[in-house]
Length: 418
Image (cartoon, one colour):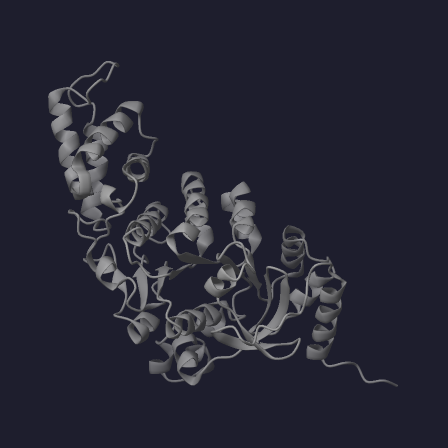
């Protein structure tokens, strides 16, 4: 009687068979790409670099999504990937909703940027000198109106929108939230924006001013033109922006948007480096419909900014529940998807969305910890990721559960567990 095949071999054979049955897909050699991330079950080392692939025309988008259940290695891959991309000349920024990327940022940068806890705020506004003046004004009006909406609990009125546009257009390169607030107060005293045809009475902008006051008091944004720690650190290593003080609150999506918009403004400056931006728990950023729409626009624009985005979530249904149609848009604008082990139903949904054979869902559901299916361009690879000793310390937080010493347990995020 023939002995049953080992699980790893069954997974290998199932995946290889699925790949060969898929028209247009090939088991290409990725061993020459840097950085190397592990080994392919199809043979040889596996490397991945979105900028190299984009330049070669192998992918049309440098953005990626990482999916999978807790405890299967998502965080370990993301952290090691960021470290290895940095070693190859590509700095990174992480939207860190739970404060778990600090050790990585300290080891490969200047530590975490802590917002809303006494740290320096960010400035999401684009100086008109950085790009086309009308484009900068549109970006800046969008951010100001989003702030008013989030903090006033309603969309900005047409009067507020016209007033914001009037003040921002007059600020020039000194654009920031405190000058905007001062300008709105002065405009209110003068009787509203020039050319305003509607009815106006003094105090009509009071609610918008109060919203900006709450934003400035939060510590999230800077009072002046300076962009604080983010501007001085971006491009010099791995920067983790700690938003744990806002995670789980109604302010979180605005906070993350402000940070990403600040990155956009800085990347529009001449000489900005190509950058990897990782957004952990991206489903939380998509909870608000307006934020979800803004995120899609940012995701698409990033190619022009030299940014490769990396979104991390547990499953597509998490995104779909909060973002709806934006989930499909993010998938379309993220040519690379990395699928770790997930429930069979989630794997089946993933295969449907990505045009993969239904039989491949069972293979994905059986993947072992640290292994994932990579799909990008015309490539489909099953990869076993490898960590260095240093990366293992920085990425692994299962130590406390395993009874290891507390110093080791403090060092990472959910890392070894995600």
